[in-house]
Length: 208
Image (cartoon, rainbow, N blue to C red; front, side):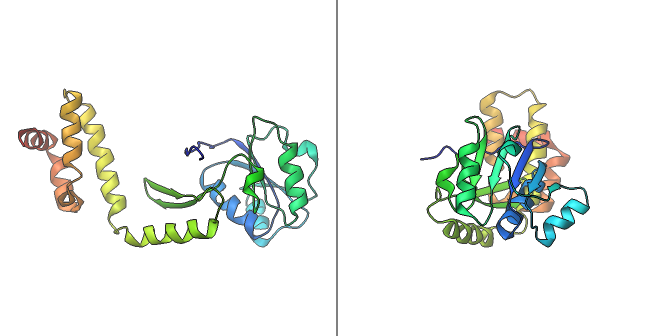
């Protein structure tokens, strides 16, 4: 069983080898995470070319060389040649993160199917057994989330920060946070009312 984490890669050096559809999907999510991306491929799809022209990525238009990945924090092998992908994985140092498209067992981490809704991130993984199943399950979860989830999480974040500034014990703060999980606090007007008078909300929560 793998150990799931969320990784902060903002500004970290990432190398993607490959320029096709699979590479594009990987690059898109890496860009969203703020990575510093270099793509190495002799033939690139249109999205890769556009990202390079816009300065969002660096594109080295050539074949992969063993020395290319030496200083990378994270490596993605996404060529259409399984043999080359294997060579890329075997060439990586033990302290580098490596993902191999189509052959996840050759790397040291899997990329889950990810759902983002504002502050909410849900990742679904089968440990490489079936990426397609992960995607379908992620989509089913997405269909069950209501449209107000982003505003609700913003509200929870704001109130949590407000509670930190109050002279509350750990158990009192926990009681207030549990109270916020009541479905009635999904209502926008009720959220505004709580934020307008946090002290009143605290008194009510602790009295119950």
